[in-house]
Image (cartoon, rainbow, N blue to C red; front, side, top):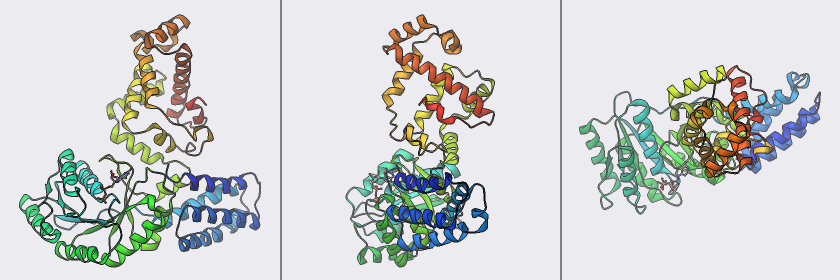
Length: 444
Ligand code: GDP
């Protein structure tokens, strides 16, 4: 899981303060020392760490914290605000051309996720803005890059312009732009070649494409898993091509956080998107404030809600909401919700976006086996319609019958019903705005 070590260490440093009523300047210094180490260990650029710690320390030794009755919270707030600032504060949108088409050039090292991101971006524009993008296959060197883009294009139903691998990338782009003009595409996304390392020949070629296409956006794709190296790569590309934004990929992996926290400060260029999975829908806008909360283990509720809005059936979600409020949530809704949740991705990732859950020791190694979900479904399917609608009727003999019918042990059936009841209670509370005791939701 991304940022795990960093989150743990930051929380550890701050929790020491929580135990104290009042804090002294020495306490603040001690916490700052630990925060500094945590950031360095997460592979954040040295200069970035230095500046960050200086800023936080200056604010933290101010009277507002030292005299506060809740110094730990005050420090969390300051760290959160400064983390947000380091990552750019504002959401950076795509630079749109005043007149169509908007031309986006993708650059980056081989394997960073350029081709995948080109596809994801095309799909995002199509879905969210009803755009008519064209992808241009300009990476003729990486074996199969052209075919990969064509297949992506077919899957997401976005046209791909390619001339195979024998024509020069500059010529492919020239003809591709012409083609887009004829077809009236409003976005043109150019996939370019990468290398294993930055080299002069690559940069020359990219500079030629830039000159020809005059893109509104040069999006540099970097792999978050490579930490400091991603930052060096970003610096190199930016010096040569003056990129306009960065896409940080593979944030679904166990990246330590260095790239996310350093790139903006080192290059001065904003992170615009983050890739959080291999699926075509796994590209999200980068929100510095949400990312800061996520790093601090405060959860990323807003992204979770957006994900839910994207993937959930809205009508059903509203129905469930009102059922939650009326406390009439039943096993049919339970199954519906479970199926909808499954669409959102691995359960352990979703749980960690809930505030307070990211570092909950009870959930630290939680792995939700898709098989468990299937078993739960089997149990519910073995209930009669009446039992599903009115779980209160589930007496021991009914439970035994359900266990036999679903092929699951009776203990599992009992446990599941207990968890369902807990969840129902919780939902009714939450729907009335009371979030306390949420940890109980998982029955641990
Ligand atoms: P390119 O050489 O820069 O064009 O890289 P590709 O687009 O071929 O991506 C390299 C690998 O990274 C592929 O296996 C992708 O599926 C994978 N990948 C790209 N973005 C992400 C991401 O956000 N998360 C994960 N887990 N994998 C990614």
